[in-house]
Length: 284
Image (tube, rainbow, N blue to C red; front, side, top):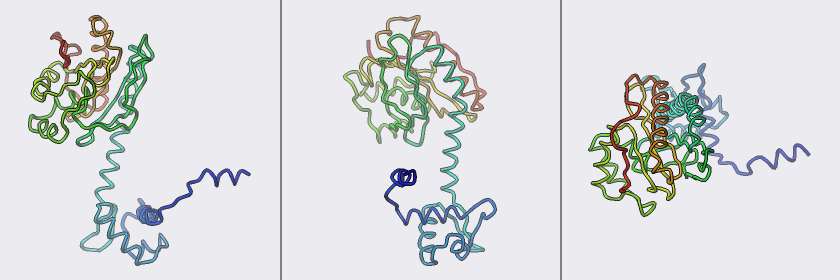
């Protein structure tokens, strides 16, 4: 019976060519860092023709690299890049874990932690708000959600720390989109907003991505001083007129973002709370 249950739980499909390619990659270990075609055949049990065909494709995709002098193969740069991305994400999550838990206890708002991956924003963590009215705020950014770098509040923060040329290039590739009647679509107005976001160290919006939602977001920096992540808080837009509440939310947000940045090796300093007018991209 138990065996039948296991059999039913297992996938009923198999991509043989993919399995064989992965068998080849698995053949490389710390003790076997480089292999010849003959050795790959011996380790995997695949026939020589199949190995040559798959190795050629893996080399073309950067998964393997061939020594021009010995003709032996090693794992390629693309695998290193992919592994670095995984390590970076894990390191980022570890650096953020403590500050996020503390922030969650202090404010009870909905929290989203995101990182940049090329032209895109990827959600690494999301914690649903549990404070008064916060549980009613539903944000679409589940773990692994991907948006273009021009998306909403998170995008404002990332673009604020890029050059004008980079920002304009991204806006050409990924034009501003309408999510609600309050979304900012005017390119010039959007560009004029970014220096204010950078100066204040946070961005704010009301109803722009989701009606009924107000959000604030702050950058997270790594040891190089680059803005590698964004931390945001979402709460009911009805709290917009509560200046004391909004100020406290911003203060706690920036403290948490600064702590995560410090955990990532950032040694710069930024004001915890700017005395200037709130950075709000939504017109009054």
